[in-house]
Amino acid sequence: MARLEEACDVERFDGDGVISHDELVARVAGKQGLIAMVTDMVDRAVIEAGTSLKVIANAAVGYNNIDVAAARARGIVVTNTPGVLTDATADLTWALILAVTRRLGEGERWVRTREWPGWAFDQLLGMELRGKQLGIVGFGRIGRAVADRAAAFGMTVAHTSRSGDGIPMDRLLSTSDVVSLHVPLTADTRHLIDQAALARMKRTAYLVNTSRGPVVDEAALAWALKNRLIAGAGLDVYEREPIVHDELFALENVVLAPHLGSATSETRTAMADLAVRNAIAVLSGEAPITPVT
Image 1 (cartoon, rainbow, N blue to C red):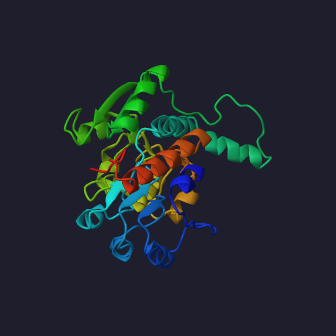
Image 2 (cartoon, rainbow, N blue to C red):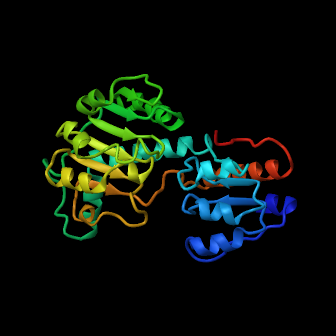
Image 3 (cartoon, helix red, strand yellow):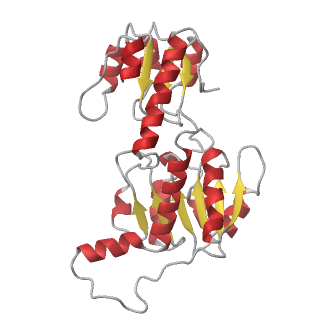
């Protein structure tokens, strides 16, 4: 904020939670720049109200919350914050993989009930990772960073991506022991993981999502988990955040995290700094650092 206030006149939203859509529409009028969070829906109404806007700087790597086409039509530059959150999100992905395959959520909840009877030989047996296949759907920065960490756990890696390299999606689903999602949310990836996709997975396999919630059909996932079509899931994002599908709460074989992918002090600071530098660059007549192209 100090960097931004040195260069610009700044109006901040200091309320609790997320700014309402109506307030965002009202407050964007007359502004040349908007720094948005991933929870801010910068749709056509916001963009049309911001008649003076030159830049929308999203403090996130994803930008499905912004109507990029509408912004482009009005000559507004849209930027995001790729790169700076890669390691934090890859680390959180592995935290979820370990948590769900070793049943840490179940165990932690059991201990907190004060009813855990102590160690037993066959208690909460999970799946070992060594020798298993990690299937990565989406092989961009974060997908590659997740793959780089797999060797430490003795896993082999298969991947599929929009560029067409890797193996076919159907084969990845049917052969992987852990499937980890790292695709952006687009019309093509919405409900990419549906009933049909889940039915193709191994009955012993696990699904992990740290990308965007609507990539997974949560009703289908709850169905698959209840019927043991897959062994478990680890989720950091949800279809209708902060709402989570009701049936998931009752299931022990799913780990539910509150969108922590980039949640380290270092990473969130770097994201904020990059968003601010993008906004200042455009408002100063310079090229943006990380434009959405």
